[in-house]
Image 1: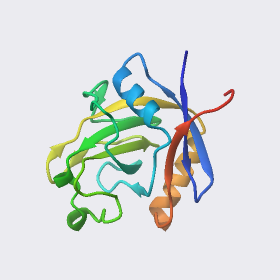
Image 2: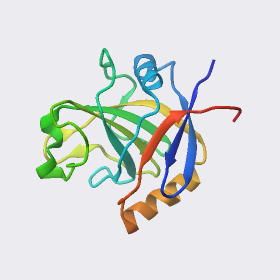
Image 3: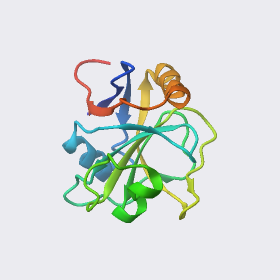
Length: 167
């Protein structure tokens, strides 16, 4: 059975729906599904371009391997990245509110427009797992994401939860 998740920018009141890609990223989909809801402070990417994301403490009992990887996500891709504590040091990246610095972080990201390249100047290409794809509401989420870029992310939460009910 197809599973769906809701992705919400709570302050802006915008939600899109994404289909989990169980056929190409089964371990990642299971790990995320079992850990929902997830989401805290929202961020807009500096380097990857058209990306919004949240950083949560690692939650999988067994960290999923890289599945369905890319470094060039397309609009509607929902991605999972694993970062060691040293990769997101609060002093260098401004993540002082991202939770426990002693544990790894999971970056749950939504890409809303084209021309993305996952390249971090600190350590090179950053492949991630595409585990879901937006099937409804991408235009509204893209407009809200552009608003985050222009007006700031303060007070915004990016929340991932199980979709209830019909599409």
